[in-house]
Image (cartoon, rainbow, N blue to C red):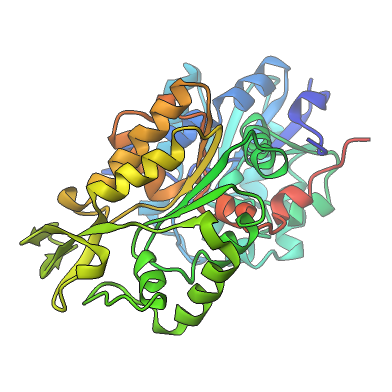
Amino acid sequence: MSKLSVRDLSLKSKRVLMRVDFNVPLKDGRVVDDNRIRAALPTIRHIIDQGGKLILMSHLGRPKGERKPELSLRPCARALADLLNMHVDFVDDCVGPEASAAVDRMAEGQVLLLENLRYHSAETKNDPEFARQLAALGDVYVNDAFGTAHRAHASTEGVTHHLQPCAAGFLMMKELEYLGGIMASPKRPFVAILGGAKISGKIDVIQNLLPKVDRLLIGGGMMFTFLHAKGIGVGRSLLEEDRVEMAAKLMDTAGEKLVLPVDCRVSSHFDIKAGEVEHLQTVDVSSIPQDGAGLDIGEASLVLFGDVLKNARTVVWNGPMGVFEIQETAVGTFKIARLLAELTDRGAISVIGGGDSAAAAAKAGVASRISHISTGGGASLEFLEGKPLPGVEALTDKK
Protein backbone atom coordinates (compact mmCIF):
# COMPACT_ATOMS: atom_id res chain seq x y z
CA MET A 1 0.00 0.00 0.00
CA SER A 2 1.87 3.10 -1.25
CA LYS A 3 -0.69 5.57 0.14
CA LEU A 4 -1.12 6.86 3.67
CA SER A 5 -3.70 4.99 5.73
CA VAL A 6 -5.92 6.33 8.49
CA ARG A 7 -3.69 4.42 10.89
CA ASP A 8 -0.79 6.71 9.93
CA LEU A 9 -2.63 9.88 11.03
CA SER A 10 -2.64 11.71 14.34
CA LEU A 11 -6.36 12.30 14.87
CA LYS A 12 -6.89 13.58 18.42
CA SER A 13 -8.92 16.83 18.38
CA LYS A 14 -8.67 16.93 14.56
CA ARG A 15 -11.65 17.59 12.33
CA VAL A 16 -11.63 14.47 10.14
CA LEU A 17 -13.48 14.94 6.85
CA MET A 18 -14.31 11.44 5.62
CA ARG A 19 -15.86 10.32 2.33
CA VAL A 20 -18.05 7.25 2.82
CA ASP A 21 -20.36 5.35 0.48
CA PHE A 22 -23.79 5.47 2.11
CA ASN A 23 -25.56 5.06 -1.25
CA VAL A 24 -28.00 2.56 0.25
CA PRO A 25 -31.59 1.55 -0.60
CA LEU A 26 -34.33 3.36 1.32
CA LYS A 27 -38.01 2.55 1.82
CA ASP A 28 -40.51 4.67 3.75
CA GLY A 29 -37.71 6.79 5.15
CA ARG A 30 -35.69 3.83 6.47
CA VAL A 31 -32.51 2.08 5.35
CA VAL A 32 -33.45 -1.41 4.08
CA ASP A 33 -29.90 -2.68 3.48
CA ASP A 34 -27.17 -1.29 5.74
CA ASN A 35 -24.22 -3.33 4.39
CA ARG A 36 -22.42 -0.28 3.00
CA ILE A 37 -22.82 1.55 6.30
CA ARG A 38 -21.51 -1.48 8.20
CA ALA A 39 -18.53 -1.67 5.84
CA ALA A 40 -17.39 1.80 6.99
CA LEU A 41 -17.69 1.02 10.73
CA PRO A 42 -14.05 -0.06 11.36
CA THR A 43 -12.72 3.28 10.11
CA ILE A 44 -15.47 5.26 11.84
CA ARG A 45 -14.81 3.54 15.18
CA HIS A 46 -11.05 4.02 14.85
CA ILE A 47 -11.43 7.78 14.33
CA ILE A 48 -13.87 8.08 17.26
CA ASP A 49 -11.54 6.05 19.52
CA GLN A 50 -8.61 8.29 18.56
CA GLY A 51 -10.53 11.40 19.63
CA GLY A 52 -11.19 12.78 16.16
CA LYS A 53 -14.18 14.96 15.31
CA LEU A 54 -15.69 12.92 12.48
CA ILE A 55 -17.50 14.67 9.61
CA LEU A 56 -18.98 12.16 7.16
CA MET A 57 -20.00 12.99 3.59
CA SER A 58 -21.67 10.79 0.97
CA HIS A 59 -23.95 10.82 -2.04
CA LEU A 60 -27.25 8.97 -2.32
CA GLY A 61 -28.88 8.23 -5.67
CA ARG A 62 -28.88 10.72 -8.53
CA PRO A 63 -30.70 13.90 -7.50
CA LYS A 64 -28.79 15.78 -10.25
CA GLY A 65 -28.26 18.96 -8.31
CA GLU A 66 -31.78 19.17 -6.86
CA ARG A 67 -32.95 18.73 -3.27
CA LYS A 68 -35.09 15.59 -3.35
CA PRO A 69 -36.43 14.64 0.11
CA GLU A 70 -36.64 10.95 -0.82
CA LEU A 71 -32.83 11.00 -1.37
CA SER A 72 -31.93 12.61 1.94
CA LEU A 73 -29.17 10.97 3.99
CA ARG A 74 -31.07 11.59 7.25
CA PRO A 75 -32.21 7.91 7.47
CA CYS A 76 -28.53 6.92 7.20
CA ALA A 77 -27.72 9.05 10.26
CA ARG A 78 -30.35 7.12 12.23
CA ALA A 79 -29.06 3.76 10.95
CA LEU A 80 -25.47 4.68 11.81
CA ALA A 81 -26.51 5.86 15.29
CA ASP A 82 -28.14 2.46 15.90
CA LEU A 83 -25.02 0.61 14.76
CA LEU A 84 -22.68 2.75 16.86
CA ASN A 85 -25.07 2.96 19.81
CA MET A 86 -24.44 6.68 20.07
CA HIS A 87 -25.89 9.95 18.79
CA VAL A 88 -25.02 10.93 15.21
CA ASP A 89 -25.68 14.57 14.36
CA PHE A 90 -27.10 15.50 10.96
CA VAL A 91 -27.08 18.78 9.05
CA ASP A 92 -29.37 19.70 6.11
CA ASP A 93 -26.54 20.75 3.78
CA CYS A 94 -22.95 19.74 3.09
CA VAL A 95 -21.51 23.27 2.72
CA GLY A 96 -22.45 26.74 3.92
CA PRO A 97 -23.04 28.44 7.30
CA GLU A 98 -25.22 25.65 8.75
CA ALA A 99 -22.63 22.96 8.01
CA SER A 100 -19.78 25.13 9.33
CA ALA A 101 -21.67 25.91 12.55
CA ALA A 102 -22.44 22.21 13.12
CA VAL A 103 -18.73 21.36 12.74
CA ASP A 104 -17.73 24.18 15.12
CA ARG A 105 -19.99 22.70 17.83
CA MET A 106 -18.37 19.27 17.68
CA ALA A 107 -16.41 17.76 20.55
CA GLU A 108 -13.82 14.97 20.38
CA GLY A 109 -15.31 11.57 19.47
CA GLN A 110 -18.52 13.02 18.02
CA VAL A 111 -19.95 12.17 14.58
CA LEU A 112 -21.71 14.45 12.08
CA LEU A 113 -23.26 13.34 8.78
CA LEU A 114 -23.63 15.98 6.06
CA GLU A 115 -26.59 16.04 3.66
CA ASN A 116 -26.39 14.43 0.19
CA LEU A 117 -23.41 15.81 -1.76
CA ARG A 118 -25.24 15.43 -5.06
CA TYR A 119 -27.89 17.97 -4.05
CA HIS A 120 -25.16 20.21 -5.54
CA SER A 121 -24.31 19.64 -9.21
CA ALA A 122 -20.88 21.06 -8.37
CA GLU A 123 -20.04 17.70 -6.70
CA THR A 124 -20.01 15.61 -9.88
CA LYS A 125 -18.47 18.49 -11.86
CA ASN A 126 -15.55 18.53 -9.40
CA ASP A 127 -16.04 22.28 -9.05
CA PRO A 128 -12.92 23.78 -7.35
CA GLU A 129 -14.88 26.26 -5.22
CA PHE A 130 -17.29 23.57 -3.98
CA ALA A 131 -14.29 21.33 -3.20
CA ARG A 132 -12.66 24.20 -1.27
CA GLN A 133 -15.84 24.70 0.79
CA LEU A 134 -15.96 20.99 1.66
CA ALA A 135 -12.27 20.94 2.54
CA ALA A 136 -12.72 23.94 4.86
CA LEU A 137 -14.75 21.70 7.19
CA GLY A 138 -11.80 19.42 7.97
CA ASP A 139 -8.17 19.36 9.12
CA VAL A 140 -7.40 15.98 7.55
CA TYR A 141 -9.15 13.90 4.87
CA VAL A 142 -9.95 10.19 4.80
CA ASN A 143 -11.48 8.36 1.83
CA ASP A 144 -13.21 5.08 2.65
CA ALA A 145 -15.57 5.09 -0.36
CA PHE A 146 -13.99 2.65 -2.81
CA GLY A 147 -17.28 2.52 -4.72
CA THR A 148 -16.74 6.11 -5.89
CA ALA A 149 -12.93 6.00 -6.24
CA HIS A 150 -13.19 5.76 -10.04
CA ARG A 151 -14.89 9.19 -10.16
CA ALA A 152 -12.96 12.47 -10.00
CA HIS A 153 -15.61 14.33 -8.00
CA ALA A 154 -15.24 17.23 -5.57
CA SER A 155 -15.50 14.93 -2.52
CA THR A 156 -13.11 12.28 -3.87
CA GLU A 157 -10.47 14.25 -5.79
CA GLY A 158 -11.14 17.98 -5.53
CA VAL A 159 -10.84 18.22 -1.72
CA THR A 160 -7.35 16.72 -1.79
CA HIS A 161 -6.02 19.92 -3.41
CA HIS A 162 -7.03 21.86 -0.27
CA LEU A 163 -6.41 19.37 2.56
CA GLN A 164 -3.31 17.48 3.68
CA PRO A 165 -2.73 14.77 4.64
CA CYS A 166 -5.22 12.62 2.71
CA ALA A 167 -5.43 8.97 3.73
CA ALA A 168 -7.24 5.75 2.88
CA GLY A 169 -9.71 4.23 5.33
CA PHE A 170 -9.61 0.57 6.31
CA LEU A 171 -12.23 -0.46 3.72
CA MET A 172 -10.38 1.34 0.92
CA MET A 173 -7.14 -0.34 2.04
CA LYS A 174 -8.76 -3.78 2.08
CA GLU A 175 -10.14 -3.29 -1.45
CA LEU A 176 -6.77 -2.17 -2.81
CA GLU A 177 -4.84 -4.89 -1.04
CA TYR A 178 -7.07 -7.69 -2.37
CA LEU A 179 -7.53 -6.35 -5.89
CA GLY A 180 -3.96 -5.10 -6.12
CA GLY A 181 -2.61 -8.35 -4.74
CA ILE A 182 -4.35 -10.59 -7.23
CA MET A 183 -3.31 -8.38 -10.15
CA ALA A 184 0.32 -7.95 -9.06
CA SER A 185 1.29 -11.36 -7.64
CA PRO A 186 -1.55 -13.92 -7.66
CA LYS A 187 -1.14 -17.43 -6.31
CA ARG A 188 -1.39 -19.76 -9.29
CA PRO A 189 -3.27 -21.17 -11.06
CA PHE A 190 -5.07 -17.81 -11.44
CA VAL A 191 -8.53 -18.07 -13.03
CA ALA A 192 -10.86 -15.22 -13.98
CA ILE A 193 -14.60 -15.66 -14.54
CA LEU A 194 -16.35 -12.98 -16.56
CA GLY A 195 -20.06 -12.74 -17.28
CA GLY A 196 -22.68 -10.10 -17.82
CA ALA A 197 -24.71 -8.99 -20.77
CA LYS A 198 -22.24 -7.44 -23.19
CA ILE A 199 -18.69 -7.99 -24.32
CA SER A 200 -18.38 -4.24 -24.99
CA GLY A 201 -18.44 -3.53 -21.25
CA LYS A 202 -15.67 -6.06 -20.54
CA ILE A 203 -13.24 -5.71 -23.47
CA ASP A 204 -10.69 -3.72 -21.46
CA VAL A 205 -10.97 -6.17 -18.55
CA ILE A 206 -10.40 -9.16 -20.86
CA GLN A 207 -7.41 -7.50 -22.55
CA ASN A 208 -5.83 -6.57 -19.21
CA LEU A 209 -6.47 -9.96 -17.59
CA LEU A 210 -5.41 -12.22 -20.49
CA PRO A 211 -1.64 -11.84 -19.98
CA LYS A 212 -2.04 -12.33 -16.20
CA VAL A 213 -4.44 -15.28 -15.85
CA ASP A 214 -3.93 -18.98 -16.51
CA ARG A 215 -7.53 -19.46 -17.68
CA LEU A 216 -10.42 -17.11 -18.46
CA LEU A 217 -13.97 -18.48 -18.23
CA ILE A 218 -16.69 -16.66 -20.17
CA GLY A 219 -20.42 -16.82 -19.40
CA GLY A 220 -23.47 -14.57 -19.50
CA GLY A 221 -24.87 -12.80 -22.54
CA MET A 222 -21.39 -11.98 -23.85
CA MET A 223 -20.73 -15.67 -24.56
CA PHE A 224 -22.99 -15.53 -27.61
CA THR A 225 -20.88 -12.90 -29.37
CA PHE A 226 -17.86 -15.22 -28.93
CA LEU A 227 -19.85 -18.22 -30.16
CA HIS A 228 -21.06 -16.26 -33.19
CA ALA A 229 -17.43 -15.33 -33.94
CA LYS A 230 -16.73 -19.09 -34.11
CA GLY A 231 -19.44 -19.47 -36.73
CA ILE A 232 -22.04 -20.91 -34.35
CA GLY A 233 -25.68 -19.85 -34.75
CA VAL A 234 -27.04 -18.26 -31.56
CA GLY A 235 -30.75 -17.89 -32.45
CA ARG A 236 -32.31 -14.89 -30.70
CA SER A 237 -29.64 -14.77 -28.01
CA LEU A 238 -28.04 -11.46 -27.13
CA LEU A 239 -25.53 -10.61 -29.86
CA GLU A 240 -23.33 -7.57 -30.43
CA GLU A 241 -22.76 -7.65 -34.17
CA ASP A 242 -20.25 -4.80 -34.00
CA ARG A 243 -18.09 -6.77 -31.54
CA VAL A 244 -17.86 -10.08 -33.40
CA GLU A 245 -14.54 -9.21 -35.04
CA MET A 246 -13.16 -8.10 -31.67
CA ALA A 247 -14.30 -11.37 -30.09
CA ALA A 248 -12.53 -13.33 -32.82
CA LYS A 249 -9.29 -11.40 -32.22
CA LEU A 250 -9.51 -11.96 -28.47
CA MET A 251 -9.95 -15.71 -28.99
CA ASP A 252 -6.94 -15.78 -31.36
CA THR A 253 -4.84 -13.96 -28.75
CA ALA A 254 -6.06 -16.08 -25.84
CA GLY A 255 -5.80 -19.50 -27.44
CA GLU A 256 -6.63 -22.24 -24.92
CA LYS A 257 -6.69 -19.73 -22.05
CA LEU A 258 -10.22 -18.65 -22.97
CA VAL A 259 -12.91 -21.20 -22.10
CA LEU A 260 -16.46 -20.90 -23.44
CA PRO A 261 -19.58 -22.77 -22.27
CA VAL A 262 -20.45 -25.98 -24.13
CA ASP A 263 -24.18 -25.91 -23.43
CA CYS A 264 -26.81 -23.36 -22.44
CA ARG A 265 -30.40 -23.10 -21.27
CA VAL A 266 -32.67 -21.56 -23.89
CA SER A 267 -36.24 -20.31 -24.09
CA SER A 268 -38.50 -19.05 -26.85
CA HIS A 269 -40.17 -16.61 -24.46
CA PHE A 270 -39.01 -14.71 -21.39
CA ASP A 271 -39.96 -11.49 -19.65
CA ILE A 272 -37.29 -10.04 -17.37
CA LYS A 273 -39.59 -7.41 -15.82
CA ALA A 274 -42.24 -9.98 -14.94
CA GLY A 275 -39.63 -12.56 -13.95
CA GLU A 276 -41.17 -15.12 -16.30
CA VAL A 277 -39.64 -17.75 -18.56
CA GLU A 278 -41.33 -20.49 -20.61
CA HIS A 279 -40.25 -23.71 -22.38
CA LEU A 280 -36.78 -23.69 -20.81
CA GLN A 281 -34.52 -26.43 -22.18
CA THR A 282 -30.81 -27.21 -22.15
CA VAL A 283 -29.06 -27.62 -25.51
CA ASP A 284 -25.53 -27.92 -26.84
CA VAL A 285 -24.23 -24.48 -27.91
CA SER A 286 -24.10 -25.78 -31.49
CA SER A 287 -27.84 -26.57 -31.37
CA ILE A 288 -29.47 -23.31 -30.23
CA PRO A 289 -32.89 -23.11 -31.97
CA GLN A 290 -33.48 -20.18 -34.33
CA ASP A 291 -36.36 -18.94 -32.18
CA GLY A 292 -34.51 -19.63 -28.91
CA ALA A 293 -32.57 -17.23 -26.70
CA GLY A 294 -29.78 -18.44 -24.45
CA LEU A 295 -30.47 -17.37 -20.85
CA ASP A 296 -28.02 -19.33 -18.69
CA ILE A 297 -25.09 -21.73 -18.92
CA GLY A 298 -25.96 -25.43 -18.74
CA GLU A 299 -24.89 -28.29 -16.47
CA ALA A 300 -22.16 -29.55 -18.82
CA SER A 301 -20.63 -26.05 -18.84
CA LEU A 302 -20.69 -25.98 -15.04
CA VAL A 303 -18.87 -29.35 -14.97
CA LEU A 304 -16.30 -27.96 -17.44
CA PHE A 305 -15.85 -24.75 -15.42
CA GLY A 306 -15.60 -26.77 -12.20
CA ASP A 307 -12.84 -28.88 -13.73
CA VAL A 308 -10.88 -25.75 -14.70
CA LEU A 309 -11.41 -24.24 -11.25
CA LYS A 310 -10.68 -27.28 -9.08
CA ASN A 311 -6.95 -26.53 -8.68
CA ALA A 312 -7.19 -22.73 -8.80
CA ARG A 313 -5.40 -20.82 -6.03
CA THR A 314 -6.74 -17.37 -7.03
CA VAL A 315 -10.13 -16.64 -8.62
CA VAL A 316 -11.66 -13.30 -9.57
CA TRP A 317 -15.31 -13.18 -10.69
CA ASN A 318 -17.26 -10.33 -12.26
CA GLY A 319 -20.65 -10.71 -13.91
CA PRO A 320 -23.51 -13.27 -13.78
CA MET A 321 -23.62 -16.42 -15.90
CA GLY A 322 -27.18 -15.85 -17.11
CA VAL A 323 -30.32 -13.75 -16.80
CA PHE A 324 -29.88 -13.24 -13.10
CA GLU A 325 -33.20 -11.42 -12.68
CA ILE A 326 -35.23 -14.61 -13.25
CA GLN A 327 -34.91 -17.37 -10.64
CA GLU A 328 -34.97 -20.24 -13.15
CA THR A 329 -32.13 -18.72 -15.19
CA ALA A 330 -29.95 -17.74 -12.22
CA VAL A 331 -28.97 -21.39 -11.60
CA GLY A 332 -25.54 -21.14 -13.25
CA THR A 333 -24.71 -17.93 -11.38
CA PHE A 334 -25.63 -19.47 -8.00
CA LYS A 335 -23.60 -22.61 -8.73
CA ILE A 336 -20.53 -20.53 -9.61
CA ALA A 337 -20.94 -18.69 -6.28
CA ARG A 338 -21.04 -22.03 -4.41
CA LEU A 339 -18.03 -23.32 -6.37
CA LEU A 340 -16.03 -20.25 -5.31
CA ALA A 341 -17.04 -20.78 -1.68
CA GLU A 342 -15.86 -24.41 -1.81
CA LEU A 343 -12.53 -23.34 -3.36
CA THR A 344 -12.08 -20.71 -0.65
CA ASP A 345 -12.79 -23.32 2.03
CA ARG A 346 -9.87 -25.29 0.57
CA GLY A 347 -7.49 -22.31 0.80
CA ALA A 348 -7.94 -20.45 -2.49
CA ILE A 349 -8.24 -16.66 -2.61
CA SER A 350 -11.57 -15.58 -4.13
CA VAL A 351 -12.51 -12.04 -5.07
CA ILE A 352 -15.91 -10.95 -6.37
CA GLY A 353 -16.07 -7.63 -8.19
CA GLY A 354 -19.34 -6.29 -6.83
CA GLY A 355 -22.69 -5.89 -8.57
CA ASP A 356 -24.81 -8.92 -9.49
CA SER A 357 -22.03 -11.37 -8.62
CA ALA A 358 -21.94 -10.01 -5.07
CA ALA A 359 -25.74 -10.24 -4.85
CA ALA A 360 -25.57 -13.85 -6.10
CA ALA A 361 -23.07 -14.81 -3.39
CA ALA A 362 -25.36 -13.26 -0.78
CA LYS A 363 -28.50 -14.97 -2.13
CA ALA A 364 -26.67 -18.29 -2.36
CA GLY A 365 -25.77 -17.90 1.32
CA VAL A 366 -22.01 -18.10 0.72
CA ALA A 367 -20.93 -14.43 0.98
CA SER A 368 -19.15 -15.04 4.29
CA ARG A 369 -17.09 -17.83 2.68
CA ILE A 370 -15.65 -15.61 -0.09
CA SER A 371 -12.24 -14.03 0.62
CA HIS A 372 -13.32 -10.57 -0.51
CA ILE A 373 -16.45 -9.08 -2.07
CA SER A 374 -15.83 -5.63 -3.46
CA THR A 375 -18.15 -2.81 -2.39
CA GLY A 376 -17.58 -1.00 -5.69
CA GLY A 377 -18.76 -2.64 -8.90
CA GLY A 378 -17.68 0.16 -11.25
CA ALA A 379 -14.48 0.90 -9.36
CA SER A 380 -13.46 -2.77 -9.20
CA LEU A 381 -14.16 -3.13 -12.93
CA GLU A 382 -11.93 -0.16 -13.77
CA PHE A 383 -9.24 -1.52 -11.45
CA LEU A 384 -9.37 -4.85 -13.30
CA GLU A 385 -9.11 -2.90 -16.56
CA GLY A 386 -5.81 -1.52 -15.29
CA LYS A 387 -7.06 2.07 -15.12
CA PRO A 388 -5.89 4.44 -12.38
CA LEU A 389 -8.61 5.40 -9.87
CA PRO A 390 -8.71 9.21 -9.33
CA GLY A 391 -9.93 8.84 -5.73
CA VAL A 392 -6.90 6.67 -4.92
CA GLU A 393 -4.32 8.56 -6.97
CA ALA A 394 -5.24 11.76 -5.10
CA LEU A 395 -4.35 10.34 -1.66
CA THR A 396 -1.04 11.25 0.00
CA ASP A 397 1.90 8.98 -0.82
CA LYS A 398 3.73 7.31 2.04
CA LYS A 399 7.17 8.81 2.57
